[in-house]
Length: 64
Image 1 (cartoon, rainbow, N blue to C red):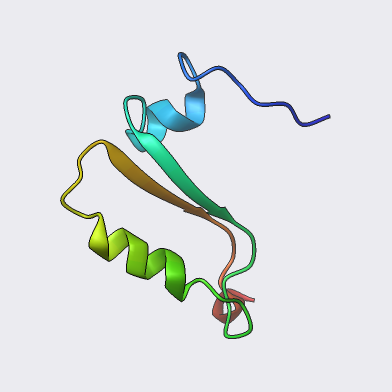
Image 2: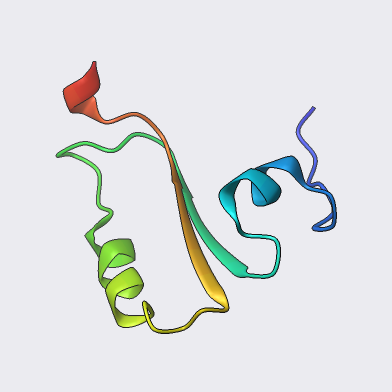
């Protein structure tokens, strides 16, 4: 069963340096057929906002 973890003490946030950030995440495949350009555009627009972090979790189709 998958359940959300509390922000405090979350190991993924801790190892990724995201403890104090609002996190925008993408989890899934990253390939030509997958639309993630919108997230990349948002990351570029928000890059000067230190309170916001982006987390991409997945496998590139080039790696398969």
